[in-house]
Image 1 (cartoon, rainbow, N blue to C red):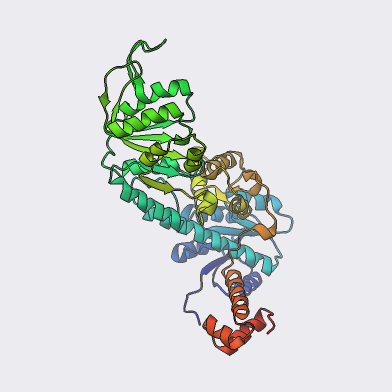
Image 2 (tube, rainbow, N blue to C red):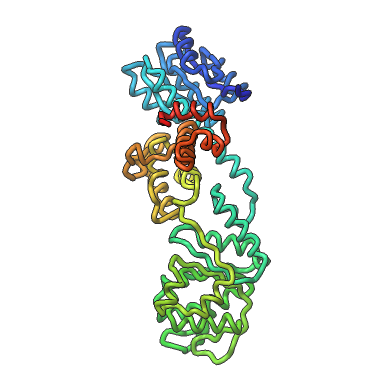
Length: 453
């Protein structure tokens, strides 16, 4: 028997018969009752329920919706993360939509179907839990150099610890990962965690500058070195003296410049275009690319000796689709940020929006997700962002991720039983030993899952 205390669910309803019906439908929760605005606010302050179901018609004027809307606004002001499910009359869709626009989680017309309302309540609790976990993780994040990276994925958290360790050295670091995975964020975090944090972080994208300009951009030039060189100009390497130089898309660096960069890494001196003097520079080199440098080496498009100079420490960044839970976590963070920037108040992602977000592959990774949600915040109406606002196709039911723990557990048990029976050639005694359960327990499980001996 579980000792876990049932979760509080507040029911705001002045009809005793409906109170009894709703309490009966939600006996798995600690149902709290309120029949007017004042008693409801007392329950909110005293018990902080995550989910509230409420009628808009409340005393002293049950025929009007003014008390209901006043209560809705007060609940969301006192506890913005509370999920309020509004119960309305059959022909009261306008007020229901108004309630959702003000921040209600959902609405149901009375009389309602208990099974469907129960499913909505469960989803509301799940969303509230996710938001509270987000707040907890954000509160746990130290105000360190990697504070701008939002993740809960174990592989990414391990990667962050690696970056923090490497930061204390002067080793050259190479970040590998698809476009939009956060390579520059990590490079800046590495710089901010290093002893060079008070010096400059200089970034240059090797793929964004034409080859004939890239050399002077990197190494600088002397006055009169070429047409238009009206004054001596230091390059990015010189500018980063004492700090960190970030070479993004290093795989696109032309071969002639690869030789010059290699010489710099060996000698730690630069010679400006048109110059005759060597200039010593103390700078840490951090590189990034989405390309496979070893393949480029085989194709003769990247110097092998330069690769080994750059790859003293190699950090591979997983794509967003492989980061467990990160796509939803980042989505909530982006919506919160863009809502504040665009004066949209408290915007929330609805269940259908989260569903399309979680099932999309995000080939552009975090950058694509960020742009998508910025557009959704601007285009959305009311207090929620829907799947239509996201602009992605809603996936078939079979493709949505399963979040029901009982369903996940049952499927895992069924697979384990099938594997054990197969390995033991159908011998139930041996299968039970493999599974660590008694023979009667295994028979019960087989019967439950419809598996024949």
